[in-house]
Image 1: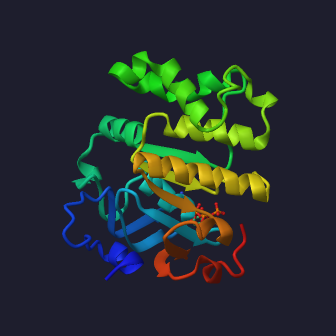
Image 2 (image 1 turned 120 degrees about the vertical axis):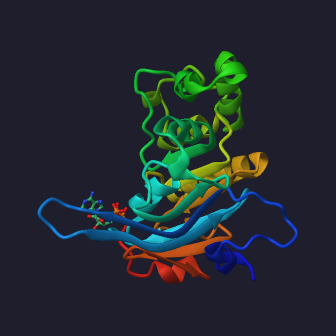
Length: 256
Ligand SMILES: Nc1ncnc2c1ncn2[C@@H]1O[C@H](COP(=O)(O)OP(=O)(O)OP(=O)(O)O)[C@@H](O)[C@H]1O
């Protein structure tokens, strides 16, 4: 067994003593809107993410992508089912521990760059290191500069976001997401605000950094060309996650 089927059943690669990075087993998320019956947004979601994985998830608007992303990013807990990070049940973490694990081990890349407008590229990238400890904290400016160098912006350290192009701003946002060396990168429509060529080069950059650091990359997108860059593909449809061979087939008729 290989690829998505293995991933959904959580079967480990033969002979590997891999600690799964993130595992969802039979995850459900239900909300209780006021004066309305309970609404099931995710049901029976199984997914295993291992170090170095490249996974794409596509789904139409309202299929539950944001809800799933919040669970993958430890921002929300499942209503039922099991969520483990590094083989430890997430519900056993205190709120503070969950925040620390998220900050240190998960990097988010969003469609909106969310850069602080009055801060330079260097200050924006150094920001997450204010929450780090030891060497990462004390060396935050030089680590941020190295990261900006790595995304090709070593010459724009002192630039404010409004002096940068969209692609450059996304590179700064990527540098900021990855500066703490996360083991899991969650990219939510990372190229949604960029033109085709810039989008492809930004994805190449994320792939390259993930490969260099051994991080797993989960990309949520409606764009089949972006999804195809992953190795394993899933479709989310009305809260149900299913493996698919080709992301293009799973997005026909999908609205972004
Ligand atoms: N707290 C909530 N209360 C009521 N309904 C909710 C809540 N959160 C999500 N929903 C509903 O659940 C469904 C899935 O929401 P979600 O935001 O996860 O979808 P999505 O796939 O990210 O959509 P989009 O691509 O449009 O952002 C939607 O119909 C949404 O209206």
